[in-house]
Structures are given as C-alpha cells and as structure tokens.
Image (tube, rainbow, N blue to C red):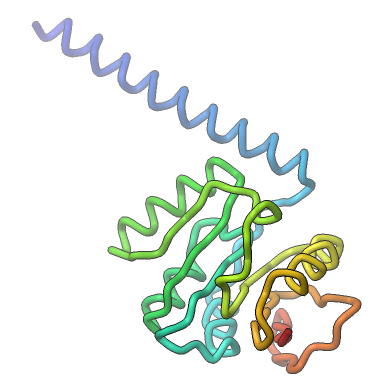
Length: 178
C-alpha cells in the first residue's frame, strides 16, 4: 500500500510540475509573439495609480494586461469599484486568479486579448503598456469609450495625446481624459 501511495504522489508531483512548465512555456511564447514582457507595477505605483484615478464605488475599472491582478485588487479594496482585468499570458492569468482567491476579491479576470474586448463599460482604464501599444489602443479607446473615461498609464505616455495630469512619481503616472 505504501509503495502505491508513493507512486501516486510521485505521479501527482510530475503532473503538477509538467503543468507548471507548460504554463511557463506558453507564457513565454505569448510574451515573444506580442513582444510584451511581464513587468509588475511597484506597490507605490499601484497606490498612486488608484489615487490618481479618483475612483468612485459605482465605477467600472478595466486593467489592460492586468498581470497578477494587484492593481485591480487594490482598486476594489480601497474604493469598492467593479474591477475587470484582461490578461493573455497563461501564467500571469493563473497568478491573478490565485491572488484574487487569496485576497477574497470579487474582481473579474478574463483570459482574453484586450484589443478584442469592448471597452465601452469602462469608466477608468489602467494600463502599463509600451508606447506603440498605447498608440494602437488610443484609437480603440476613442471609438469605444464614453466621454469622461479616464486613462491612467504607468510609466509610458500616449505620444499623440496630452495628459490632463502628470503625477511626479517614480516612475511617472499619466492621467488622460477622453
């Protein structure tokens, strides 16, 4: 009986390790295809971004490329907003689900490319994206978002748009209004 239990445990460990390796590999492929590294927002940036957004409990917040979900969880916990994230890297998506569960959070995490998502529900959009992605996203935001939607960008400016406010933090946080 002990021999069978050891074999079962070894098999379970092998399966768990295999799944983890597959998730890491799939995430690496996503990062290479889309040329997007995973760089989490610093805790201080998360705090400043939530503050800069001036969130109200009745609002809906989107985080485009939400990574491990830390910004969404902070926004929900601090202000009571409805928080929705989009992530296409499998490992980061899984990490976000785990963090959501551990935080007893109600945030929604979608395994989906935000470029194929309707952004019209968003009152606030958080992003930490390279300038090229920001420019591509701007046209989508202008077409889909309602007037007054706020965009809070960590580190990178939208080159073709003037921020309504720039937070003098390290890194800088840019606030835009549609």
